[in-house]
Figure 1 (cartoon, rainbow, N blue to C red):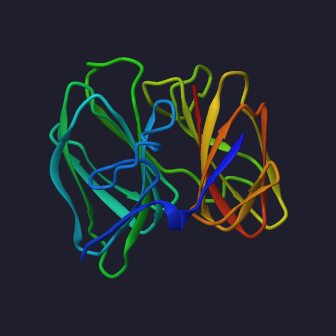
Figure 2 (cartoon, rainbow, N blue to C red; figure 1 turned 30 degrees about the vertical axis):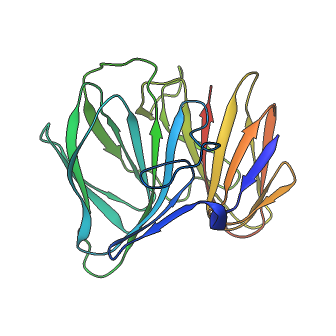
Amino acid sequence: MIDIRAVNKLGHHKRDWLESRFHFSFAEYYDPDRMGFGPLRVWNDDIIQPGTGFPMHPHRDMEIITYVRRGAISHEDSLGNKGRTEAGDIQVMWAGTGIIHSEFNLEDDKPTTLFQIWIEPAELGIAPGWDARQFPIDTGAGELTVLASGRAGDDGALRIHQDAALLCATMGRGYTATHQLGADRRAYLVPARGNITVNGAPAKERDGVAITDEDQIVIRAEDECEIVLVDLP
């Protein structure tokens, strides 16, 4: 089943420095029918203005993936980690027993746009940590690249503590990408840029696509596009 969640129907909140679209219930947005998708608990589509961001705040027992779409985000945490993650790259923070961190757009003149994705871990109370990695912006026409994973065999990906994986692809118009989902698996997909079809169902830029009971996912690019997909139990 392919369930399209139009971007203009998502939760929405705007303030001076931040505009967010919420794919699932988060903060002041509550929808009892959208409390998550398997272990995927949060998918926020954020626009952060220059010189602003999230000051130090705590998390625990959550895998938090930040996928930067445009601009850059600067991270600092209570473990002493510091880093700047640019467009096309990701950072992963496993909050575990507890971590305090901040995220700011320290760029001079342009907003940062990003997806923040929270996945519930398979195990609670792990040691907290953070990592980031640069990935090529062009991941190859029609080829999904694993960027973060807790699945066996996904060498080179950033580690998360759940049987799940985050994949990305950039594709030219008319190209297709195919993903084998497998039995008893689900996926959530967002076209970060461009319009697509998923098994023939049309999805516009920044729509959410919830996928269940499909052995194979065929994604066709209707424009130059960039897609982000999370494969979940």
